[in-house]
Image 1 (tube, one colour):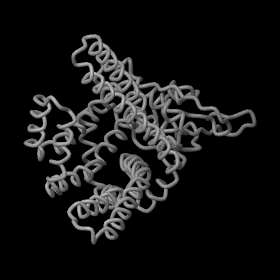
Image 2 (cartoon, helix red, strand yellow):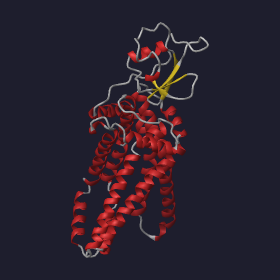
Image 3 (cartoon, one colour):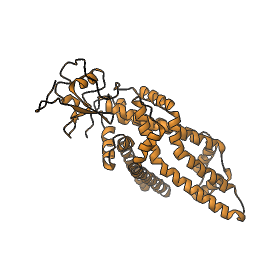
Image 4 (cartoon, one colour):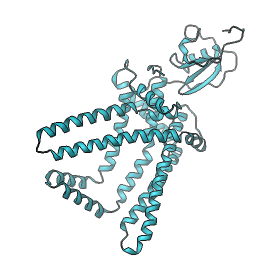
Length: 379
């Protein structure tokens, strides 16, 4: 038994998967270690101190035997699984989604329901004709705009809710939907600010890419302009990839670690670039890139399959036309003439319902990278 200077038993607090457990005495910590609930790399601090170290630094814990405890234990940290394979991460993702489908669907409806109302209202407006419905069209346009704003306002709650619900279910808990929403609302300002920053930067990079394309089209007859556009394209791809790496885990740190704006971005970058001692395919960066690629491939398939004939026709037009302005006008007229496509609309709803899988997969990857004890992240 370890005693402090005043003869009292020393107690410790440990942090596992972003949650704190304890205070617990050395006997309880040894039992947690024996059961695989506490690893040397987990953060720990003395109950009377504020600075964090690691469980490996606790005297007599990982360099001593593990006697069976006789005193009642405090709430235990979750059992920490070994480093998951990529297939294991995907399997756990689908299992969590299956078990919590109703909760995930309700979170999705926070953003999906207003979005659907906005799209349907816009579709009705586009089918209306005549000057006698101007007032109705104005009202419908205002309603569609308000629904769009509501959908955007609910997005931070949706994102935070996915993180909280997945982390709880991965730890073996089944939280109530109301409790998840109450927690998620608290993260609205931070998630909203980070979302505006992250997606704003991505939007600027996409605009940069479009400008590069315009330069290439304008200088089709100039070899120097083409080289300049290629150099800008290489720079744009590098910036896009670097920023993607830096913000790979910003949602998890902002919500599960309760990190502030700058800390979320810094810790996300550190986690994404960690694991240099692991094979490349086991590192968080490449696993995150694979997960994102799988989702983008699914979205691309769902988007292009119903429109394949139209896309193929547009591609042929782009490769043969000599007048870009006439092509743009033709594409706009064809889009307006096509009207509302119920099949594409249904596929879009299916995509939104399945989208929590992407968030769940990143939470599982984050928890695995943080708790498997094989990746050290500086704080």
